[in-house]
Length: 441
Ligand code: PMP
Image (cartoon, rainbow, N blue to C red; front, side, top):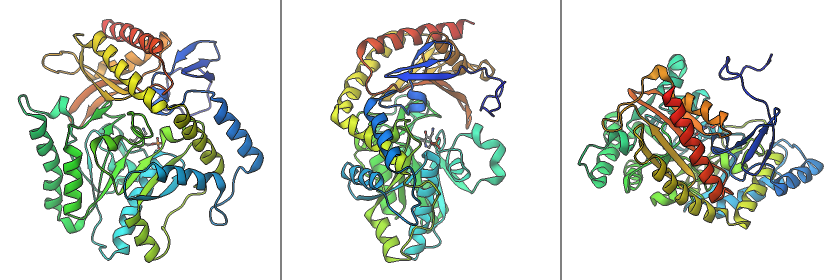
């Protein structure tokens, strides 16, 4: 009997025991293609020798030193590397232990920026429905996944949610992408004007929505319009690239493909590739200067910020990705995966939408393809697909439930960047069998 409080208390989980490349192995000797990299984490695959060597070397040298006394070499090197590849205006990094911590820190940075610059009335956070920003209270408040928020509502700070840019569910029939981009972005301006621009602190959004919606990119121009609205009203734009960032979509940052740079960006999962828990906030010079010229500190901190082992692992992961030119493979294999999913599911009567960018793809499952009517919630189709896929040696990340009235079942495919075409074929074949079995039940 397990003594761990697992998320799904009654689920009988296999025990993970080993990993190499795109495969995970359990104690019963069963092997799984890790086609979701856990939750879009394992970007480099499992058991990479360079990362293991870097971890050994760092453990031999220094495991931990508190940041109130010291900086450390891997943290400095990782910050240099990230800033070199960062969007225009980004000048500094703040290292934490995961995605939720990164969002919490980003929200506090935004708030402190306005206090330091004499605008203490700015406190309102605007975010989007069908989003996920983490499970700590601030991040949960920002997120727009009602299923996760419901029980905790009385504890959540007030946040204001607008509809996301989600073409499959919200674009009107006959509406052009351009018109939809205008309409979806206008929701932000309307909300800003309703609240009063002088009260608005930050807008938070995932460039490609991950866990709650299943790899949903925006339509062209949406984020440029969002950037312009934030600039018009002096609002900090926080882009949450915890899931879609660090190469997952084929460029280091997903928002590069939207042609914008944020004021604050959160990254995590693919940063350390699962070898250590690590996340970061990348912040702009403007925000750094406000702190530096004001109180001289960011009023925040955790015991494990800038953890040397975590930073050493992330550095090794990022070096391996660059050295092996793996983002090129993300683009090539991403295009191949998208084509193969289209061939297999393009006419499937229960697949409503196939979407995503790079090696970050979502497949939406529906009762009726022509009306987009979802499956009945009690069927838990996404969980069934996960189960059937696991029985066939395939890991895909399920998502579903009713989210602000929009019902959806989807699976997320986010394999390690090292995946090859033969393995992509196997992923698509096994997923096809799993979906058919889950729906036939
Ligand atoms: N933001 C996004 C976009 C995420 O996908 C997640 C995790 N799924 C988080 C934040 C929270 O990250 P963590 O689970 O590492 O706290």
